[in-house]
Image 1 (cartoon, rainbow, N blue to C red):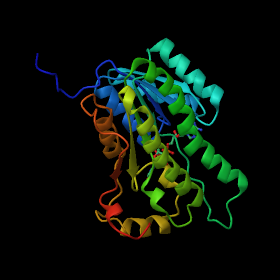
Image 2 (tube, rainbow, N blue to C red; image 1 turned 135 degrees about the vertical axis):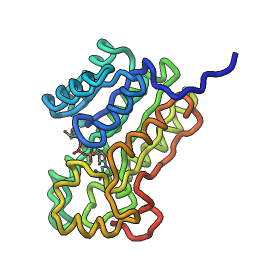
Image 3 (tube, rainbow, N blue to C red; image 1 turned 60 degrees about the horizontal axis):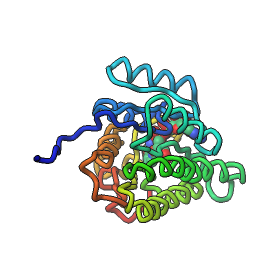
Image 4 (tube, helix red, strand yellow; image 1 turned 60 degrees about the vertical axis):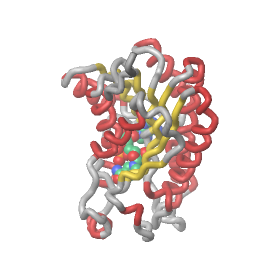
Length: 256
Ligand code: NAD
């Protein structure tokens, strides 16, 4: 019989962390439109539930579950609740992240540790919970949202360090999980128009925009489409890769 090569996530269960907003929300929308059942996992309980309602109204299944990805007990509870409600997780998108840097001379211990806890340890905790179930079923997709900033970014020591760790984790997980039919890939977005960026002062934004090869910010849906590519069943031989979604900015040497 001819193999079905249609693109679809029909019936698959996906957990998208940090999906109440920005890039994660766009990924959740994209996955639901492709037929997946999606958990909007976010630290903001009300916004997670609102996002799930909004996506469900457009047709499809989305549920909001509160989680702090830096907290092992809450991550384990997220995966138990997902399995009980929708079934075992086929796709994990480690998207939750924060950026609170203030330059190496001013960042506090607490800011450093919170950045590492969410951006790096969060990827470890969620990937571990997902991998245990995926290995048992010998199938799965893990997609990590790093950042082009992993290459280094002015004034972003904690953020860029944490995203560099996400790239390394992607490669190590890909090597370890390949024999179980699980792929692990990474997206490195450039500047994407989300609330995360709206905290930047206007003069910084102006300078950043001028340095963009396409002269514009990316759209969260650009990242969502790339995430869907990695999630698709046909994308089974691509693993351990970093895909830039940055309008060509990664081709240039200057960091920001
Ligand atoms: P955003 O601020 O719009 O969304 C982040 C979401 O993560 C929020 O809903 C927030 O409530 C949630 N969150 C924060 N801490 C959490 C925690 N401990 N547990 C669970 N959820 C938590 O940001 P965004 O721009 O959509 O960023 C999403 C991801 O993309 C992040 O990992 C970010 O580093 C990465 N990224 C963003 C850009 C950009 O330009 N916007 C560029 C490169 C990479």
